[in-house]
Length: 318
Image (cartoon, rainbow, N blue to C red; front, top):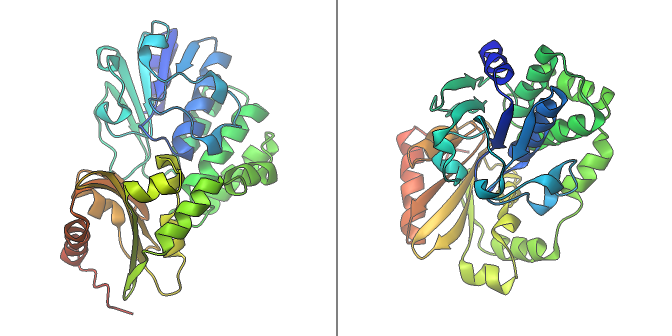
């Protein structure tokens, strides 16, 4: 399928590249890198992300060229959608009229486009973009390597998530050889936290509950306003619950609107949380997924617990 993706790219000149709303590190890094690879191939490529680039990834090369709606973008012959399971999740209008190329590595990925390159064995979509560049004969520049290394680092949970293999480290090594600076990238990602996020973390931890090997936290809109926090500040907070000794599954509930919550699910490998999230219309990785669920909060928590029990997971098991 990689060859078919390259074939379709070679037949066209103008591209829009995008990913899901509220983009994470793999979405941003892979999209920025892929766009630059296309430019190196002599193509015109424009990146459009509905919610823009999160502050954490603002220092990445090419991030300042990202647009937030298709009306600002030049005409295109095709749209490449990376790390995203549907057109709807991009929250962009009008892209469905174009020829669509779908590149994704999630277990829950869907073949919604004209061409679908899906590889659940890849550690990140960035790995697939690296292979695309190699197959196209494009040299990986230090800037592209920086984008791809950032994507791999964040999507593997700093090389902690299930699916991290010797191939993952070989890829990271090659990206460093191509010019990625692992220390500088890690500092940008992990040591540049905004004060608002730290305040929000304190509030979230004060709501921490544990039920055997399961832990969960939540924040409501009032708490976020009090902390002067944005939705972006919620990214990664669930990992603090997962870090507790003996916890196998962690949940983080963020109130999106009255009686509606965005849920981040994390697992140390015992539970496939992608399958749990899929039951509510979400998806992702076996160890890191997300979904939206109706409230109120006690009901939302109970629905998640019920789904976990349905899949044979007993939170009380130590």
